Length: 326
Image (cartoon, rainbow, N blue to C red; front, side, top):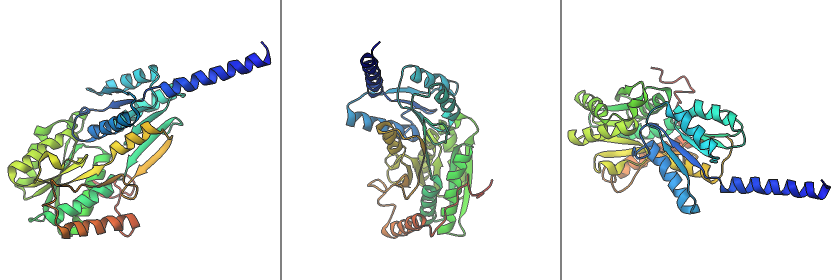
């Protein structure tokens, strides 16, 4: 074969590879609780839908109904040539790591955990910073000086929410008392609203009048219990203020939608850490909770936010700073 033909063949191969990569659809694998959990998964879904709307392109998706499906779903997406493949939730870390090694030419991403592979983008958040803010708001709004926390699965990540919340509450009111319960130790803890409501009612019975739920779909039971009891609740991950207007003090927003959209738009291997400074977490204020967050509270929480961003206030990270050990 002549040098010219070899060169042409090389160019054709490169063009075909580029064409395949350009045509490849991204894929998203939702975790336990489903894409319409009104929380973490649903935020990820909104991010992909935004990408779809802006680009006019399609994407592949799969909703996990049991933990054994994670690896199978991710592998199936890889075999179909999806690129990038985005795993939602820390529980997909081992599957992403394994399959990313097997398909080194594909790009993968994981939200809420770090996977150290050259073709994986990991996106994690400073949940303790956002939780500090809503903890302070809970203490400011409380009439009893007692507030509550209902977590989902008892894992370090959810303890991170709890730790930040407790710090914020005690920053705003050093005498504040914080009650805390975890829903369970398996994936089912993310989708048990009945248990969430039960735990919230128990905390209300002890005097809490504001409860923060970091529990996925389980939080729906907490919010309903707050409404039924005439108390306040705080949402998580998505802006959940609209779920029980007038009862939701605020929501600790975690910009999972932005993270997923950015990955779909342009994969960047490595670790991205999103906190208050990066706009990755925040508290929610809208028409649904405007009457609950008065001007004085907003001024105080915004000042706390500015001080965390500047470093004047240190919001300790349960997973890194040996803080709030339980």
